[in-house]
Every structure is written in C-alpha cells, then in structure tokens.
Image (cartoon, rainbow, N blue to C red):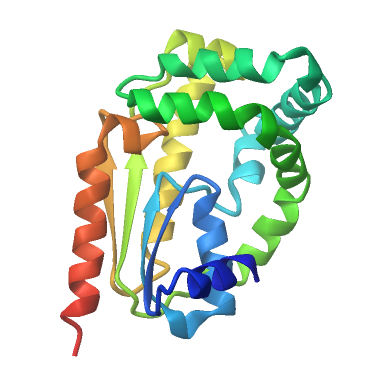
Length: 220
C-alpha cells in the first residue's frame, strides 16, 4: 500500500515502468501482481530470482543465513557506530558517485533494522513471487551481471573458486528464465559489470529503461 500511496501523493499517474535491482526484482513482480493494470513494463537489474536460495544450496552456498546473521549483528551493535564503519567500507565500490556514497553513509546505520526485518521475510517474498512470474506481453529487459567475483568477494561470501564459477552459471540460467516471464522479454548479459550494475554500467541501465519506455509508448 505504501508505494501506490506515495506515487499518488507525488502526482505520478499510471502506467509505470518498474525498475528493480536485486531484491527489487521480486518486489516488482509482487507490485505487478497486485496492481497489474498500472504496470506497463519492467526492467530487472541483476534481479534476485525466487528460487535462488534453493539452487545455490545445491552447490553448498548458504547465502540467506550468512547475510541475515551479519545484518543482525550489525543492527544489534548499531549504537557502537558499526553501521557507519560498514557504510564507509562501501565507499570502495568502483564507479560509485561521491554523493551516492555520502547518502549511503548517512542512511546505512538507520536502515539496518529494516534490512534485518526484510531478510527475515525473504522466504515469504520469494514464495509470493513464485505466483507472479507471468508478465504477459509487457516489455521486459533483464540485465545480468557476469563479472567474476574477486578474491575478496569470494572470501567474504565463504565460497571456493569452483562454487563462485558455478554460482555465476546458475545466475545466468535463472536470468534466462526471468526474460521468458514475458513474451516481450529479452536478456542483456554484461560481462564487465558486478551486482551493482548501476555503478559499473549505468549506461546499460539507462539504455534498458529507455528501451522499455519506448516500447510502451509505441504500443498500439
């Protein structure tokens, strides 16, 4: 209910093109399921897949429990300033604009409790998204980040070189599925972009949004 209310208050009339990064992908599916008449097209920016935890577990990767545990610890210790320390470490992300990094530092400590709450209902989000995959003929572009994980990222995630390679293969296959959720969907593979495509390849995000908006405007 919050997003429709915010859009109405901002004076933004439907139809909309939804652009979802990471978990924003499944959330875009849920919004489309609930407000389908208002959604004309979608862009998935290295979006999560409802089945990803199950498929990653098949190769021994437990991403959900690891991420939740880290967030719970950070949230519990937020009074110590650990949130600002974590946010400061994120400044090292390549191609991140200075103003984006500053906003991240300011908001991260206050958003950790919300992030923990969100992680705790991830299974529910993914379960609900399972029934929202049929997007009809809405224009859809799926951006897939395929840049290999660095040694530091593999260490942080606790995965071997082979697991990291297999994880990317699974990710690519899941995004191929996402592109088929619409009869007007297509996938764009980005070998030089990491998960935060908007920092590594903002041009690709802009092009995808422009493509979908153009397709929506030119529909009979």
